[in-house]
Amino acid sequence: MRGGGRKLAWVLSTWFGCGCSPVAPGTAGAIGAIPLYLAAARGGRVGVAAAALATTFVGVWVASFVARELNVKDPQVIVIDEVAGMLVTMVPVHHVSWESLGLGFLLFRVLDATKPGPIRWLERLPGGWGVMMDDVAAGAVAATVLAVLGATGVLP
Image 1 (cartoon, rainbow, N blue to C red):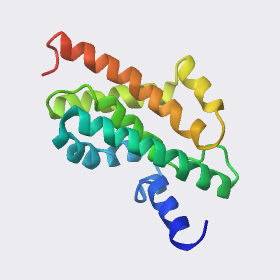
Image 2: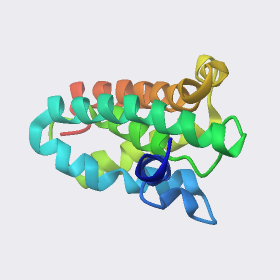
Image 3: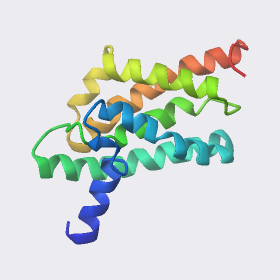
């Protein structure tokens, strides 16, 4: 990849520089996902799901490139995986609220940091798939919790 494609891969993989944060780049990436979530949520849950899917597939491509260029399996500077994970987390939310966003963020970050059971196993996938899919899985688990809370009336 040359020139503009290389720059685009770096900009997207670091999510516009969030991954360059000297402290907690993953958290910075998850926070950086919020504007995209708020924009996608205008299209309802379908809009959020479409953004999550697009971010995941673009993320596989750019994460593969940047990880290969750095010769590191999952460099901390790559945070597009956190963006995809946050979007997946928020798919079941019917009504955007700071409460649901805060809870989704907290659930996702705890699951992403601890990587229980099968979530950790996904890191073994090759290239960008290994970078992305553990975060997508953490987002799916967090989304399940939010869906249950929404169904029980705890969240609007």
